[in-house]
Length: 260
Image (cartoon, rainbow, N blue to C red; front, side):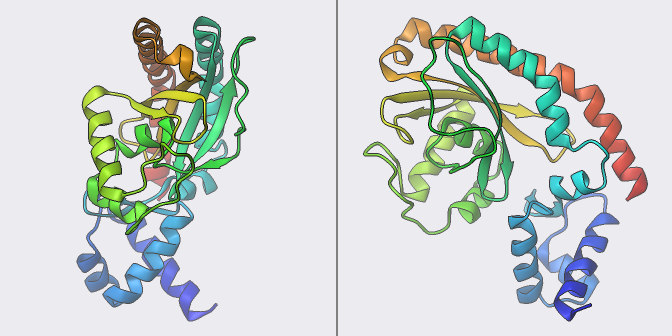
């Protein structure tokens, strides 16, 4: 085994035996890996979803849990939430998306479409930027500002459309607004003519960070009455999804802890 692989595994085994997030300083001290080297490995592991930044420290990530689980979390989420997003698509008449955080991007996990819904260019399995999509902003709203800065980098970010916000601090302001409102909005920032509203999908006690969104033509979505109706439907869908997932998730999470 190479020295690099050995040190990466040392870090993973160390995190597996700690019940809470660990600061870089503590991890370096207790593993004997210097800070610069440890941070380099942590950044690589984070990009693969194996570790995550949490509460100013580091903890095991969702991908590692999936490796040891017979039913991956994302598969479980997609299976249980599918009927709910299908219902939401019927009720709203628009496209509904389910996404989750993977490294520094969002991945579309599933989609449901109504007959009249606008066909989007992204499909399930596609990776999307966090900073200019509704699901991305809803996902970022669940993270700390420090972690958001680490994900975004120094900027400016790629301008996808004329409406795209590219400066990291401006994006953080948008995310703070999303936290306060309870939903993230993408107003033609990723695709011209398309507006999206998204709400966080949280599974307390888990590493899953997701969101559910409704996307449709801007001309329809900017109507205040329609927007408010959609946000109400979206909130109900998120609550129903959480209720359906919690029993399954906590069972799996307990197994992970017991076997870790």
